[in-house]
Every structure is written in C-alpha cells, then in structure tokens.
Image 1 (cartoon, helix red, strand yellow):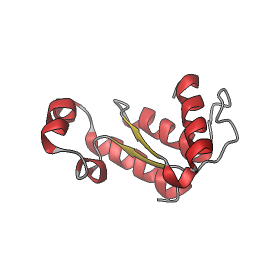
Image 2 (cartoon, one colour):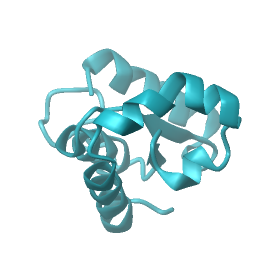
Image 3 (tube, helix red, strand yellow):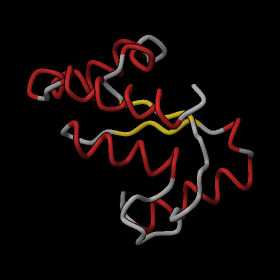
Length: 107
C-alpha cells in the first residue's frame, strides 16, 4: 500500500472512527493483498509509511471475497470485477486476507 493511501486510511479512521471504516482492497495477488490487509489492521510492516506502528484494526476485505461480492450490485460487480475473477488466483487472495483478518482484525 503506497504512502498516500496509508495517509488516506489513517485520516478516515481518525475522522470517522475505526469502527466505521471498511477497507476494500483490489491487489492482484495474494501476497500483496495480505500486505495491504496487514497494513490497515496491524500497521505498516515495512515501517515506511504513516501507518507504521498504527494498529487500527480496521475491517478489510478484498473485492473478490464473497462477503463483499454479496453486498455489491451484481451487474456493476460483473462489469467492474467479473473479468478479473477469471485471471486472479481468487482462492489464494481470499485465504491471505482472511488469515490477516483472523490474526489482526476485529472482523
């Protein structure tokens, strides 16, 4: 997660309260998705950005996870994300994000 997005996430959590912020990530591979999920829950593991040592514990999901997909308008989801599901390793992404959520998140 780049430094600007970390700043935006931190600002949103401070403004609205971490219990009112849900992060939806769209990384193309499991490892990157896991890193982004860890950053918004437990802090930036690279110690390079605004979320260093910031354990926000935010709810985080990937756009291909069933929890998000169930809430999205089906036609919009299919148009915007459906094609990506065919080329991404969806199972790996879901496993990575769910593992981070279980380890560091509240949700």
